[in-house]
Length: 149
Image (cartoon, rainbow, N blue to C red; front, side, top):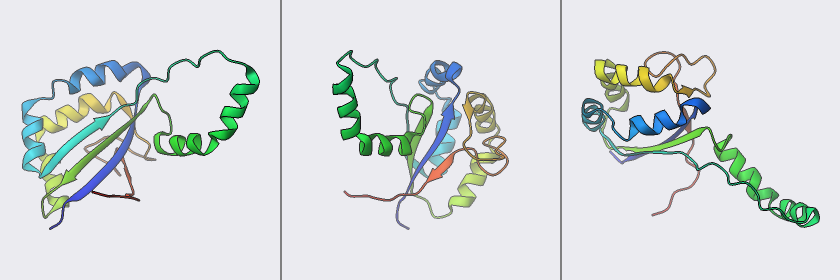
């Protein structure tokens, strides 16, 4: 079965960004082992750096630049939604039973404990979402629109 690439987003609570990064610097070994056993590879969470303050400049120059870059701004906004709160994650699934592997992940008590910790730092973009372990999903899965090697 070919590798399945998955990208998804969730929002971090502004008050929890530092704590989220800190706990992910020390992910529990049981969680890492379960991820591996569920055929997930190259799992990466990305969080954008806070936007630097703009350099002071002449108002007309700033307006001209804004008009010239409108396409880039719209593209960036459509990807990140809220540049300082949105967490973007990618991983590869290399197994043959994605749904079964995700059920095995959910069944692990240590993973559920981890999700209880991290879900409290996040806000789901999914209407009606209640957590990683239950409901319609917590992270919003994104469509892959381009890939090249």
